[in-house]
Image 1 (cartoon, helix red, strand yellow):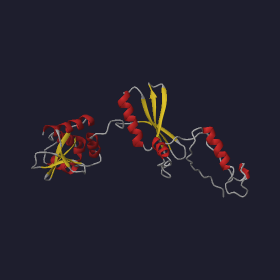
Image 2 (cartoon, helix red, strand yellow):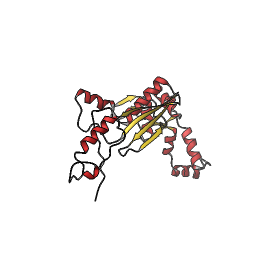
Image 3 (tube, helix red, strand yellow):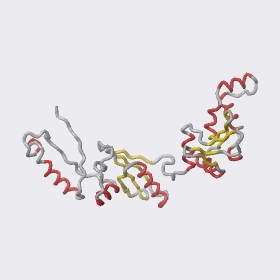
Image 4 (cartoon, one colour):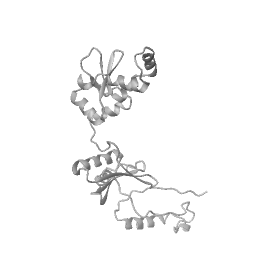
Length: 254
């Protein structure tokens, strides 16, 4: 049974017509005559050369020039990442390829920082099979990384990274690399980015700072039912939780 095999070659030629001519000359010596080759009995029956060659990342180009290229480093996982810049929503410019999405996103942030928001920025991904995907950057993907944004990400991953014993006066931030005091400025920055108040919840002998929406997880229907049976509330469960969260002390006031 015959098979189709896709391979990639790294070549030291930039002119695409020269690349195609050179590959045709080389491949015909190992291809069976039914594929216009000259190798009788070859198991390589036929071939095709793509109409255009793909660019390599700048880092690969530099390693080739410096003689430090490492075998197979040009191929990666077969995926290519580009940044599409639509200047003034008129002229489209493709930048890349980048080694990974992080480098592409960093280039997009640098462009946004230098030129503002007048240009449209989009990501483009080409997989190993040549399938092209294009999309826009969502949410805060183009915002500069910051401690406040990392804390927010940890919050919504379910982590409690800001805490203190009830007997302590200062909240501490622990991101897994040692503790540091939490400043009022950091609290304000987190609230400004997340558009949500940070509140203090107590569990046992510890207090935690969390977004109000995450503090709702500390209240359950059993607590609400107990309050209702004791005639402490006439509210439904969700309204009762909202009231309880609103009553929690605010982190910026401590």
